[in-house]
Length: 158
Image 1: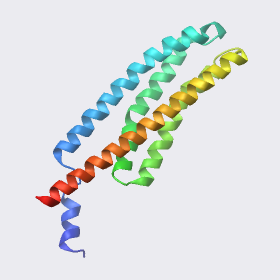
Image 2: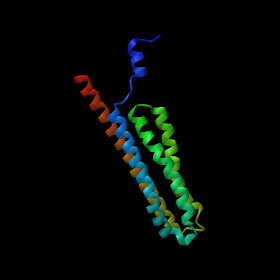
Image 3: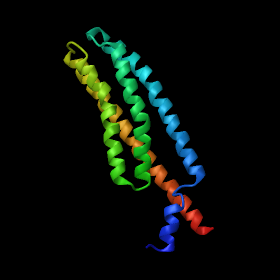
Image 4: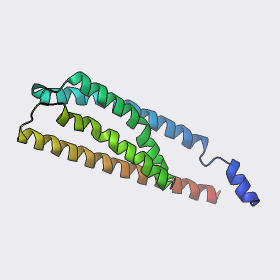
């Protein structure tokens, strides 16, 4: 059998009620943001490449399905990284990455023929938004880890 400390850690919650509540609020805020962005992005994509045969309703359906998935996977990935659960973080990250790019892939598959300049512009936008997303995730992970460390130090000093 284990030590008393091991037994206590098995029944003691890893995070405070406040931390869990904050994570829930941030996850729900993220969900609202990414789902709202789907509608805005559909309008932009439709205006930009609608004349090349893109069906905006199919695009919106794909984007909403992917956003709903991303609304759950990205926060889980960030929280897993903060909690040093790397395997879980990578698994959630792979799902997040896949649903992040699927709507963009449909732009190329759902259009008849895109001029090369339009393709390069779209690829540039995809690369920029991917970089922004990656930087945002890294920033959130660092901030979360700093907050966890601060709380551990405060708890140790009490």
